[in-house]
Amino acid sequence: MHNLQELKIWQKSMDVTEQTYRLSAEFPKEEKYGLTSQIRRSAVSIPSNIAEGAGRNTNGEFKNFLGIANGSSNELFTQLILSHRLELVPENTVKPILNELIEIQKMNYSLILKFSKKI
Image (cartoon, rainbow, N blue to C red; front, side):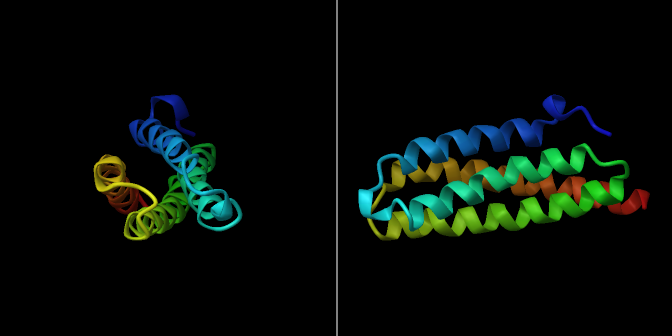
């Protein structure tokens, strides 16, 4: 079992989730049940899966949840790019979040490799 609040990947993913919520709050009302909802679910899924994996009994289980978190980060990345392409957010607003997501994906990949070597 891992101490969740000490995991930098969890801390960073919480920051990205918060930024994503603030960003999507500016979306048009007609996107409430569309892109806004989907973006928020993807964002929340990242730290939530890291948290669930950290609370499991084995590194193999943690690795599995890191894989799910990675899928959610790719989903969020795609949705944020789409938001920009649809002109819902300017590039200078979305770019820092995308950069943070790339950093989270690199950290996630490193952790998965670390746990793969131990199994």
